[in-house]
Length: 358
Image (tube, rainbow, N blue to C red; front, side):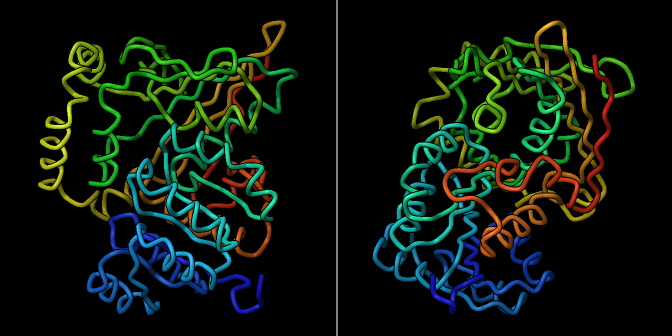
C-alpha cells in the first residue's frame, strides 16, 4: 500500500441520510476522507458543508470505481440496499487493494462477505461489514457475554428502544425482506421460520417484557464471533406489532411480488428521510445478551447505548479509522473479532452491566 493512501478513507453513499451523518462525524473527527456517490450535485453540497473533496462514480462503472479506490486505504460503504450494492463495491476493493467496511444489517450480505475470507486474506485486506448500530453493540455484547461461559451453546439477544423511526434506506431494505420470514440459527445452520412464530420474555431490570424474534444480522455474525451454534435475536415490540407479524405469514407470497414491492417502496419516498436530531439524540437503546452453557450455566449482560442513528456514525467512523490505520486483522471480521468485545465501551455513551452468572 502506498504512503499516499496509507490512512485515507473513501465514504461512499455520502448523500443519503446515514451517509450525511457519517460524513459530518468524519469531519468532526478530522479524518482524511473523500466523499463519493452517484449524484455530483448532491455530493458537492455535502462537500461544501463538511469541507471534504467529492468524487462522483456509479457502482456499475467497475473500471472507474477500481481506479478511484486505488487512492484509498479503506472504503466506508454507506449506500444500500447492500443486497444490491455490497458485491460490486467489494469486488472493486479486492481488485484495488482497499479495505472494505459497510453498515449493512442484512444476513445474506454478511454470509456472502464471510465467504470471501480466504480471498481477502490472500490480498492482505480486511472485510468488516456491519459497523453501525447493526451490529457493533450487539456483536461486542455477544462476544463479551459468551466469554463468561465455558463452552457456550446458546445465545439470545434482545433489543429495546427501537421506537424512534427509521430512515428511508432502512425502510426500503425492510420491504425487500418482507415475506422471507424469521431467520434463526440452529445447530450452526441458518433456518427460516414463519414471521412472529418465536416469542420470549426478557427482563431489562424493570420486569419481564415481550420480545419477538426477528431476522437481525447477529444470527449470521455472532456465529463467526463466538462459535455458538444456537442464536436468536428479539426486538421488544409493543402494541399490535407482534400480532401483525404473525398475520404477515399469510401474506408472504403477495409481499414478495415485484408489483407489491414497487408500490411499497414508492410509499417510502413520502416518509421523512430519517429521525430528527432531537429524536436521535434524545433516545437510548438497551441490549440484553443471554448465553447458556453446559450444566445450566447462564450469563446475562446489559448494554445501554445512544440511539441507533446516533451510534452508527460514531461507530462507523471509528471502525474505518482503525482499519485504515492497519489496526484490524485481515480477512472477514466482525466488530468484536476485529477490535475485541470491549470495543463498544470506547464509544461515547455506551455502558455495560453484568447482571448475573450461574
